[in-house]
Image 1 (tube, rainbow, N blue to C red):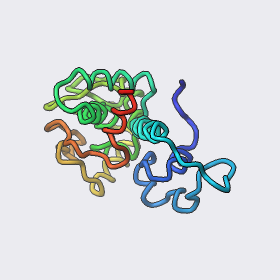
Image 2: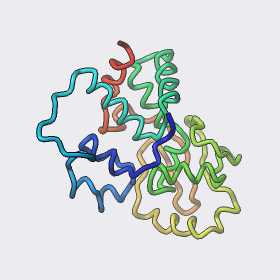
Image 3: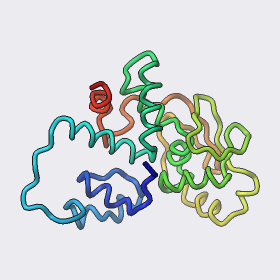
Image 4: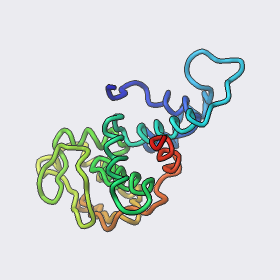
Length: 206
């Protein structure tokens, strides 16, 4: 299955809640507030979803929230199963520690899509080395910064000016002046409220 490249607002309308796929725009200018009904032809009566369908919805919401394909998501789940501890918590931590997500959470990009584009275009450095792999796994102690040449771009200047209005989570330490950040620790368990990891584990356990 190819990556979804259509209007992301349709995804939020499909599931009836904000998945924050457009970053701050989801707060200030959200299509879901004006058009809460699902996309497509309006049904007079919606059928009740089965338990399996509800589990699928949670899995799909998680996939869209982190922008990963089904094959990638299954690989993250299998890795979470092999790790000690609660599988659902391990899964969320692995997704949160993706480089593109960390770049977004540090405030260097307004959305996850934008953060992924920054990484792919080679504007981001991980521990002093340029990388263009959005799915690169970060760990505690890793330092994320900008490629020296990218600091001359207009986007960098705009992003730096907007850093004062952003706040990174406690598991990340950001120097807004230098536009660098460090992963202090793995993210806490309750890092998202858009999907239930336990339901996703039930989906793949059947």
